[in-house]
Amino acid sequence: MATHEQLESTSSRPVLDPTVTKQDESSTDAAPSTALKRKSDEANITADTIHIGTRKSALAVIQAEMVLAELQRAHPETQYEIHAMSTMGDKNQVTALHEFGAKSLWTHELEAQLLEGKLDLIVHCLKDMPTQLPPKCTIGCIMEREDPRDCVIMKNGLEYKTLLELPEGSVVGTSSVRRSAQVRRKYPHLKFKDVRGNLGTRLNKLDAADGEYTCLILAAAGIIRMNWKDRITQYLDSKTEGGGLLHAVGQGALAIEIREGDEKTLNVLTELINEDSTFAGTAERSLMRTLEGGCSVPIGVETTWIEKGKLLMKAIVVSLDGTESVEAEKLGEVLNVRDADEFGWELAQDLVKKGAAKILEAINLNRPVIAEGGGA
Image (cartoon, rainbow, N blue to C red; front, side, top):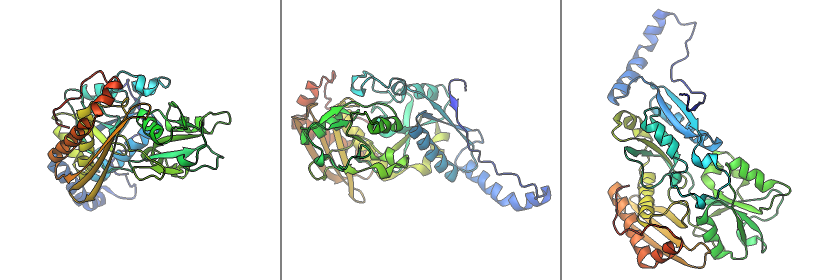
């Protein structure tokens, strides 16, 4: 694959033991080999290598490796290879995210390879996926969700821990209008400046001696997966003292995109599916799709399972300057994907009735708020 940077792949083939003779090998390994073949046959999985696509960033590769480990656990009889490539969002590290016209900044190039058959699946952060996927592409799996909250990371050496402690004029770094709009609403004395780059680059910009940022607001999930949890000084959610914020749609969850009709790959993914994450993610994406929101629109959500099958979802739409906002929440029974899709659509309608359409139109969405639900 000349168009991909091929990373080191982990083979599922057993290591040969030179101390075992052919006769011994056949007698000791017959049962496990037969069992693995039977498992493979039952799942309709061939011996062909499954090619996993991901972005090139350190976090994206770590996430792909997490998926690889789960696939190897579920189907050790199958071989896998990871292939990483840069997307539009990776190549342009200067333009603010809200200034991009495209909604598929992190997915388009990978999806092209998927549709050409060069990849079998793509590992995405669910929050980076547009709610309308390209024709012949579908989400095959949503895995167990990591902490979906946003978090604060202070500049090294500062004594502050929370947004509430920051003095007037402190500079908050974020590339998300959702974050800046919600924080402006509660902390109008703070300043906001865009910050782009992968997580390591952003933290270097924060900690630079001549850097202008006082703190960064980032997704906690990425920080945790990079093993930098000790840098987090505050978690932000709807209950944060002084004012928190609702997270992005799909934040914290990994989604695996496949070709429609690819039953072999779908069967491989079956054991990786997390039901609670799938239903919550579907509800959140249904809400955002109904409002036609994306990276450039300040729509926040927060979903909590009160008990098995009972979901509480909060949502907010905020003007860019934080002066106007509409909030709504819904508690209801969600037992399947259809329930989740309807749940999100109904909450979106509540937001529209309260005035969300007016706020979204003022942000120049360039597309009407639709009044019909659709499949996730």
